Image 1 (cartoon, rainbow, N blue to C red):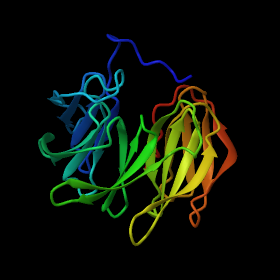
Image 2 (cartoon, one colour; image 1 turned 135 degrees about the vertical axis):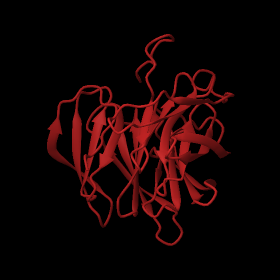
Image 3 (cartoon, rainbow, N blue to C red; image 1 turned 45 degrees about the vertical axis):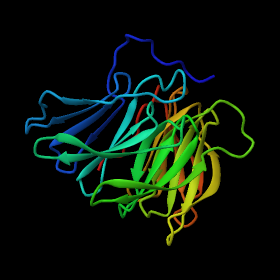
Length: 271
């Protein structure tokens, strides 16, 4: 079974953080309390008191979408906008970002499929596509992105699970290969990494298959800046696994390299 959610009234840290390209704005999504926060980063590393923007509404799922649940904040490549995936509302919001003040202003939003539960988003290297992984539905959605207005246009949704899988599963992370030719997503329950090829002309996604992650509940993973390696951290197995990435085919091959790390939340490469 998948792990239980923290009880109501427990400590409520942000679910996701991002720093803008100037290094002056810190952004946060607060899943449990249903708001987005932004604050200025001072030269000494301290921050101003956060400004918060609450979301309102609910989705169709009786327990996971009983109220807003902003799950991630993703800064656009041009640093003009911030995408907020709200799992509770089945909606992706676009906020305009002022890096000097760290202020956010909602510009527009787009609805996902009912009950999809959008969780995390990732831009293509050229900034023209956005990929959103939907936790509750176990799907990956592709959107065209207009940098002028920050709008999204839905183009495609594909499953992250193999045909015929009937067990419990929650999709988690989405990452785009640095060469833009492949997209990866993680499945918590099926405990796998799903790979997709990107058509260079149309952007269409084609499933490439699934690779066992090596542990239980692969919550997060990251690709190395050179695209040669994928490092995966697990929520319920104290294990970080390493995969070799074929840059021509996108296929993953597990290596002997591993590390004992309990309850991994996020994996990032230091640049």
